[in-house]
Structure formats: C-alpha cells, structure tokens
Length: 227
Ligand SMILES: [Zn+2]
Ligand SMILES: [Zn+2]
Image (cartoon, rainbow, N blue to C red; front, side):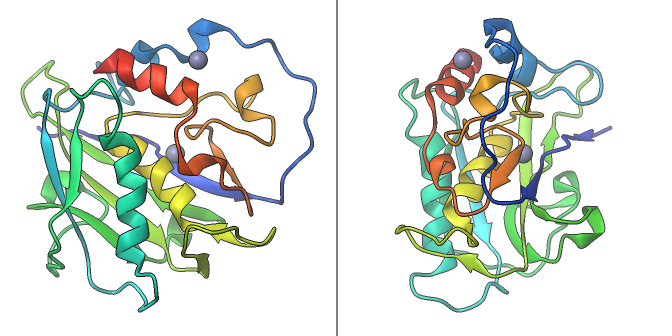
C-alpha cells in the first residue's frame, strides 16, 4: 500500500535568536542518506532521475500583486535549478483544479499547493508537505506530494520583509525541499541551524529572515548527493 510519510512541518519561532553554544558541525549529521534513503517509516525517497514534476497552485489563495503563484514558483525553482540536473524539475502547469487531498498526496490525482489553515497540526505551523512513494515493496521512489501553506498574513514578494513578517518565498523553498523527497530536517542543534544564516532545511523559520529563499551549500550537497 502507499505510504504517507514525512513530518515535514515548519514552525514559526520568535524573531531571530542569538547564536548559542552548539556542537561542532559534523559531516555525518547531514549526509544524503540520512534524508533521502527510504526504508521503514519516516525515510525519504527520490523521484525518478530527470523527472518533470507538474504541480497546480489551487484556487483559494488571496489575490495579490505579485501573485502568490509567482512567488511559489520561485521557491520550487531553487531545487529545479540545481546543478546536478538529474533531480525533479518542478513546474507549475497553471491549473487550479478543485479536487485533491492536501493531507494525503497518495489519494490525489495531481501534485497540489493548497491554501488552508494548518492550526490542526499545531500552533505556529507555516507549511506542510507530505510526499507519496511507490506502492511496490522496498521501492522508495517518490511519485507525488502535496504542499499546504498556512492561511496567515505573509510577505509575498522578493524584497525585504520586516522583522515581524513571514516570508512566503523562504517557506516555499523549504517546503519544496520536502517535495523532492527530503524527509526530516537538519538538526536544530547543528551550527548551520543556530545562526542567523540557517540552511534552508533547518527546522525552524525565523520571522523576517530571507536566508531560506535560496539553498545553502549544505542543502545543495545533501540534495545533489541523493540525485
Ligand atoms: Zn520542514
Ligand atoms: Zn554540509
């Protein structure tokens, strides 16, 4: 049967915290196999190589200029543009179909991006991106995802948000990482997560921060290692 996995949730935290004493960065803490090797519950998989992955941004997003969809596309493109070239190539096909299952992409006929209240997942959840893997036993090939964006007031542009604004571009880039099959997050105790320049796949978004919009070297080597 299809397995739905990934605790890919992004939580808001108070405005940027100051650096704290941390454990030294260790290479083993963020190798590709930690995040992309399947097997058992919670493991991630990968899309077939050179896969074009179509998604729809569902209707329901507030009207805005620039549009939510245009910022969402930028987040996905961070991963599509990665130099390995063999990973998923995400593209928005422009559809806004109304059917689909935001909680279980295995039950959806397409990959959708949804606008909905995520309070049911916990206080402060900004985004949620579960993925679906092959129903073949021991096959961890990814074949679908759903992305949900919490219904809150976002900074929807490419400029500089204020220190109290949630940057949509940043959070979508993070969530799109989960759509590549990346399960879990870098440890919040790693040096790369406890500075004001956190890697995109760190677990907590810092309000007003735009570092996540593009991938850090640690996001890149982990992703490229998997693909
Ligand atoms: Zn996440
Ligand atoms: Zn690294």
